[in-house]
Figure 1 (cartoon, rainbow, N blue to C red):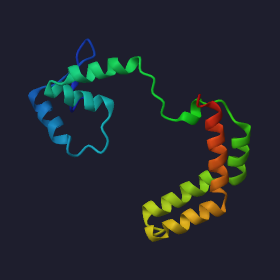
Figure 2 (figure 1 turned 135 degrees about the vertical axis):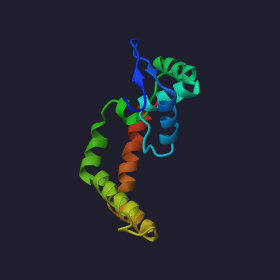
Figure 3 (figure 1 turned 90 degrees about the horizontal axis):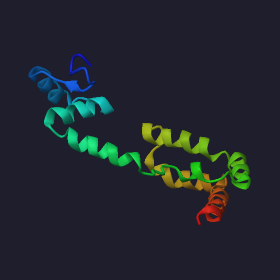
Length: 135
């Protein structure tokens, strides 16, 4: 906070010229922008009006990131999901692919393993659940 900017009495970021130059330099090296650091860069470049306008526009927006989270619970799907326990297997194998423990050449084999573990049954149960509530 104090290295890149300070906050005035109204809580708005204020920067000296030196701080602005440091923030510009850090843009290249920041691993993940935080909302505060992103806003500081926008303010420094004179684009804070766009950021503020976008935030205002989001206030009334209805974002659906995971459709399953808003659908009523479906007991049949939950039974199938718990019985098959594919989520854990998928997560573990995905990590192996990402880290190189399992070569990408094994991907078709992975899909076959999923099908052998009941992927089609789970997909059918999920589609049935979705069809019940989509309208």
